[in-house]
Length: 69
Image 1 (cartoon, one colour):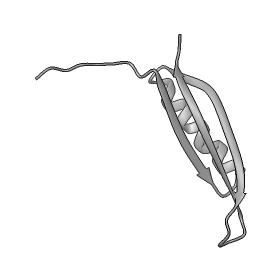
Image 2 (tube, one colour; image 1 turned 90 degrees about the vertical axis):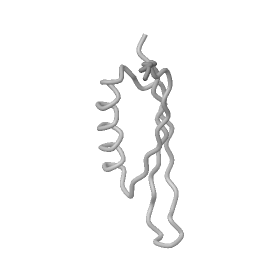
Image 3 (cartoon, helix red, strand yellow; image 1 turned 135 degrees about the vertical axis):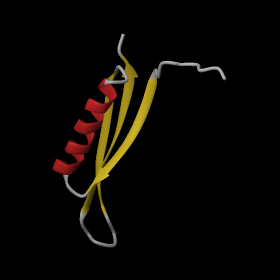
Image 4 (tube, helix red, strand yellow; image 1 turned 180 degrees about the horizontal axis):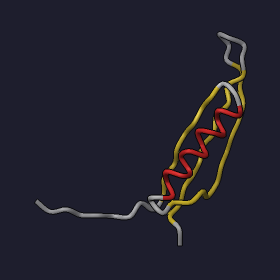
């Protein structure tokens, strides 16, 4: 059996929550987790939409992580 280790260069993660504070908390937790993989935030995109069933806002974000150089 051969074990091959490769470094992660790019990673994209998606998040959603019903309020902005929860969304921020989820993103902050994942930023800390990805530091162990030597990844840092490259870009963040976010938006809010209304859930047609509940009428409540739904916050979402896409975070692109890249390897530290």
